[in-house]
Amino acid sequence: MSANCINMNTIVGSHDIVFITLDTLRFDVATSAMKKGLLPVLQSFFNQWQRRHSPGSFTYAAHHAFFAGFLPTPMDEPLAPRLMALDFEGSRSVDDNTKQFQAPTIIAGLEQEGYATVCIGGVGFFNQLNPLGCVLPDLFQHRFWSDNMGVTCPDSTKHQVNKALNCLRTIQETQRLFLFMNISALHQPNYFYRENNAASKKAGDDVVSQSAALSYVDAQLQPLFEAFKHRSNTLFIMCSDHGTCYGEQGYSGHRLAHEQVWTVPYAEFIQEKHLCE
Image 1 (tube, rainbow, N blue to C red):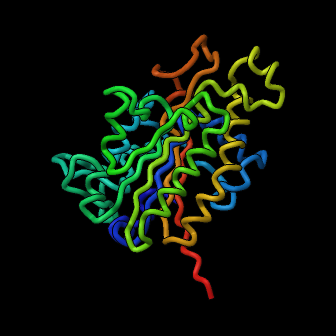
Image 2: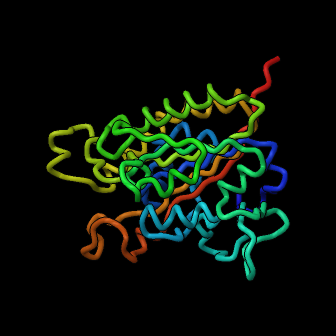
């Protein structure tokens, strides 16, 4: 489903919105894992990732763009209309389906529309342990982070989902919600998701360990989808903020200009509320 197939002017106010960034996930890893059947939870909603370009090569830059409405750009249509945008002169990537806000961020715009906004942090830019780690979380009304949600905890996604579920219990179903989650498990280090942990540490991170991390993440997301199924009609947006290099052309990591960094997986779908008979 492309961005301009969804009329966000009818979504905003009637649907909850869940935005999940799978931090550092490579497009090739995501696509291969889907084809191999390693993502049964996600595959129940979509069977193919869209190939897109990220607006940033590392977490901090990409998320500033995301929160201004600049989600990853379709490869074959750089000026594709966006889901949400902030009104400014000269904007070309909007159409009648784009929800435009008179606000500094889409988060603030959704708050103006009556949404509660919640941030479940993951990587260090969301840890609230220093001024830099507060910049992005402070955009939200409610923000959470702990060590067991960070990159060094093998059960990080489980803890992040549990925190999100706890938040849902405190917000009335009649209150529309914008939930943002930055999933940290794909970020380095991810070697410990291999089956043989001792050998994995020596081998380090690579596409195999990141694929194993993604499979772990998929297995943890079902309770989140179930909770929203019983709460509200919900728009889910899922993407990576950037990829990473594992030795291609001698490069390792991200915050650099390489196709493996700029090319990211993207998906969006609507889950209807389950109506009990």
